Length: 269
Image 1 (cartoon, rainbow, N blue to C red):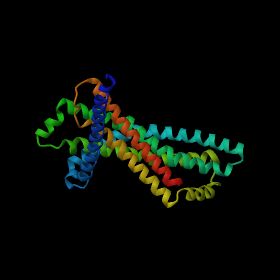
Image 2: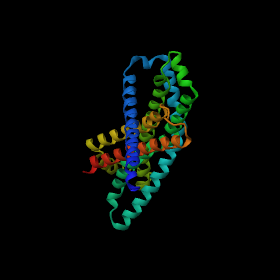
Image 3: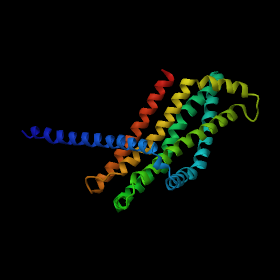
Image 4: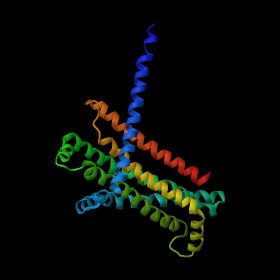
């Protein structure tokens, strides 16, 4: 008789969890649509809005650009050396550089850039936005006739997406240069073979998948953390706030994993 009492609370918890999950994803989709509408609105590009956006892009991109580029260069040299030495031992030298470019440039660099921007820029920015909401600054801005989404949310989202794309693009160029130097050294003798192999790897379909993967990953790391910070929690308990933050991170990692899986299917199947 006691066991028969458990299904009802369990069903209620499952239903509440499903509702929170659906509500969280609906908020992300809704705010993504709002951002798209604001991007198409001429009022989002007035002088004050442009200055605010430029400042946010500079703040979110420039401080982390040099550090991540150096990290990408070091990672490229290490991975290139490991792959080349392993390929030499198995007699697969001619495939080594192509493997480096496929693994490093197509897969690792865009994903690493998105995660780096999330940890260094968008998640701290989402915490700042949540603090503004809890302090009442967003409500005061709305009471003065301003739009918190346009003035606070939109610049952070666009700056996060811009930082992710910039870091991925620059780091891919650095990785390609480091891969060449790691195999051929300081000589131009390998340029014809390298450019031919590069063209064989970056076919039109692979280039399209790579561009879409980079763009979607940047939008995910820019939008998902910010979306969770705009809405108040239904409970004031500290554990609920921690659970909401962990749920946002779980959704972010799930989306990045899904994008990575789809890109792998598009490139190799």
